[in-house]
Amino acid sequence: MTEIVIPSVFKFLRTPSRYKTLYGGRGGGKSQAAHLTLLVMGMERPLRIVCGREIQKSIKDSVHTVLCDMIRKYNLSWFYDIQETVIRGKNGTEFKFRGLKHNVTDIKSLEGVDYFCIEEAENVSNNSYEVLIPTIRKNGSEIWIIFNPKNYTDPTYQRFVVTQDPDNIAKKISWRHNPFFPDELNKERLKLLKDDPEACQHVYEGELDTRRSGAVYAKQIAKAREEGRITVVPYDPQSEVFTAWDLGFGDATAIWWLQFIGRELRWLDYYENTGEQLDHYVRIVKDKPYNYVKKGHFLPHDGAHGNIRGESVSKQLELQGLSNTVLDRENDVTHGIELMRQTLAYSVFDAKKTETGIFALEQYGYEWDEDRNIFKPKPKHDWTSNSADAARYAARAAARVKAGLSRGKPVSMKLPSGGGSWMGN
Image (cartoon, rainbow, N blue to C red):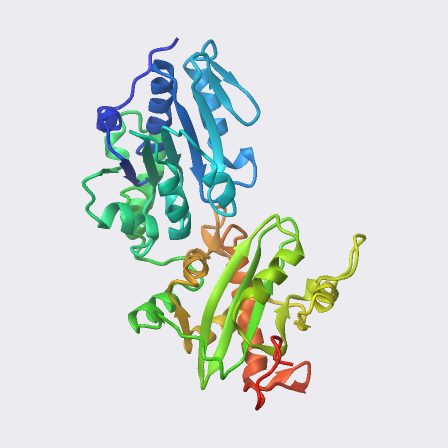
């Protein structure tokens, strides 16, 4: 076995505590130190360790590769057996890998976990924490949180940095704490410090990203917060509701629920899931206590596309009782983004019911072009895209509903006298 050296700043990882939070900038060695410590501890006694992150579509998205590289680097293969989806030690220690979002049942089934280590925790939502924290309940169990701070309002920053919890050891770690900080990375740090000091503070010093650079809707969402437009939003049964969908073909499906009250657009609810059949989402929509606009379930253009397995999504929804409207194909996403920004100016969000959707909207950003040192004209496609795409369709749908149109036909925004059916038809 090759000698293993872990910087002294990480000694606290050996101190028993319910939570351990490692946050800061790039180059501090947070992830490497935490996972190397877990490997060593797993050799000392049998442990059940789960390495997680908010989104994990496959084992490739996990730290499985990182751990495998460490095992090989330090010649630990005599002890650890590397398998495709799990790593096992001779003494019974086991490393598993899980995504938090969309895996509620799987996470709740975890029993006897000693350590749950969350990587890239800046992306974790409150909903995920509400499922995870009570699940990791073995006596002496710990939850380790590793992240680079981004926004002050992010759930992880609020829970584990802003809040002073005696059961949480929180350490801010930067490149200064890493005796193995590579020269090449230091050159990049110095270059960024010269070219963009504010960016350097965020990237390498671990400060919050006050620039909001690359964020598509962050300024508009921040203004909504400042003006108290992210709050408790009551549903008014005297006005009908419409929905906007982003359809997941091998990806997540996202749905927003909205209604107009005067000139105010209320974002009442949000739902997202993956790996479910269409009837699952139909049940979700029908179980909501809302009266819907006629043909008021708005789908993206691909909702009209059929496939070898059957009818289009639009037709399937019609057959299951959801009268819908298929929006035209977007020729330029930029126009949709601008419409969404304008729409946010008169929008009010229910803070609780739309929390995960708002969180994704805040994180939705443009992709950085490393070669040209500028942001690309289109946002990057990642875990935030489902919420953002559905919201963009919601803005387009709102424009139609606001004008009283749905496929060129009048839309009643009030329930007819004497009530109406569930569909508002």
